Length: 373
Image (cartoon, rainbow, N blue to C red):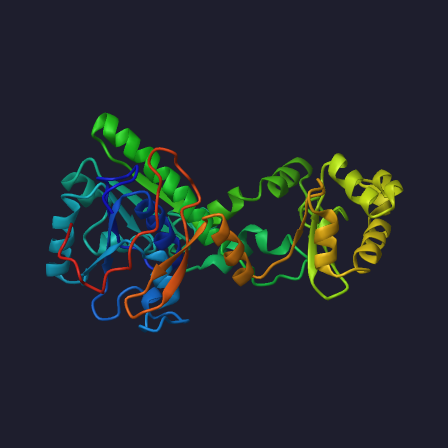
């Protein structure tokens, strides 16, 4: 990919699985040249993660590693390390997601890389950060962890529903870390362009997911108490911000937080007096029951037609396949041809730049396909 706002930026991606792959996908979508450094033979685990395309590739690999090249190196051997250092000589950013200390043990830690390439930006994504979950460093920093661990350890897992922890649908810690790492990388690149000096960017999944809980963390900081699961305004405490089933078993999402939207909704439902109950803490269960009784009286499509064009903040609850179809109509999803035939739906870059728009990159490179830049 030769165009885009990041054209000319060269990124070495040593990461594994979701956080690093999503981070470098964002950079590639906006023009950076990304080369994945993968283990010989097996490559990144996403390559073999089901479901698979007709060509036998993991669907997540095709989506997340689009537009990227691939170099196969055994970093445990001298030849692999030497080749990596040669690639670093021309790199602007290096991304890695090993546990703290692994890069140093491989002989390619920050001190070595920055001495060789002073302008390099090195981005490290870990579960708990260099200091570990409890801030004590040492062994605590090297405890392995995935998205679920980070969400559990920060309190995020208990905030929704009735307080029974459930595996979430979105990998908030993984993707939050990727987004924060992308911001850090771009900030460091700007500094490097101005000064010629790179820097290390460290992001932990735990810190990232905690930063995405500003309502809950501000409440806990003020009161000294953890918010009750499913009780605050945005996690189920308000009847005006909830989901309701319709007569056909399909669901509506009601997010009428502003009084003007809620008043309009209950007016259209024929019970305008309910507007006075919107934020009354003693009326929430009663209000929830009244809304449920009204909305279950018709099929979902009937309600969507009745509320069409009205300011109510009511929308259908769709599955992901339906969501892709709707997004395709607004250009947020594009269909990309697969090498073995057929096509694959890819989500386009959400940030739409007017002068240098990003775009979905081509099919991922075969394992070890590239010699370098």
